[in-house]
Amino acid sequence: MRRFLWIGALLLTGCPSSHGMDEDAGGVVYDECSAPSDCVVVPASRCGSCGAATRGDAIAVATDRASAYRTSACGADTGCPACFMEPDPTLVATCTAGRCAVVDLAMHAATECTVSADCRVRAAECCECGATITESTVVAVSDGAAYEALVCDPGMGCPECEPLYPDTIGATCDGGRCAIILAGRP
Image (cartoon, rainbow, N blue to C red; front, side, top):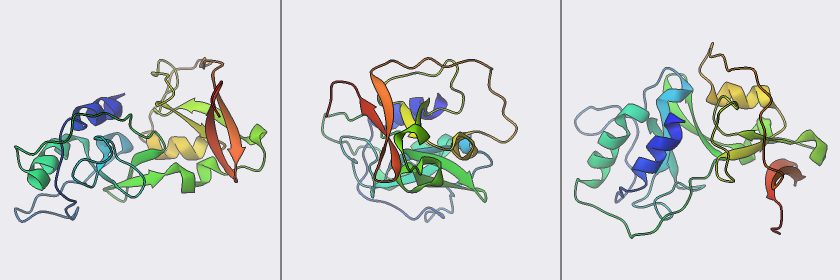
């Protein structure tokens, strides 16, 4: 849930261009992490697509350094057009070898499939119980354990429950990848 709240806060801020993630001129490292929950996906370009990161325009930074990164990349007075786009839940921030990294689920083993029966809907958050469920906060996966390894902190336990998803949200296998389908939409 923290990851989505930070993304929402960052959507209001724009920046002119991407900076290298290792450090800026002041020696500040923006992508250090020790667990997936330390990381968040943000746009690499000035404003993303109405403030949201998209494929080819996404970077992962440490959640607690995201505002500082945006300020150093953009300056304090830079803004974006007044528009909004939901974050893409298939762009996931994770922690790999002590650095935040963006994982595109459309290219990850967690979404590989042969038939639609291989796929299921799950919350984009680590724990499904109590997660916010909307069409922009769910993903379709075939390998739940591989997905959890991306988004859950090591040793984190989730409450036991049978998550309930609306009948209007389903999963299908499309081109060898699990994808969300919405009832009543093509």
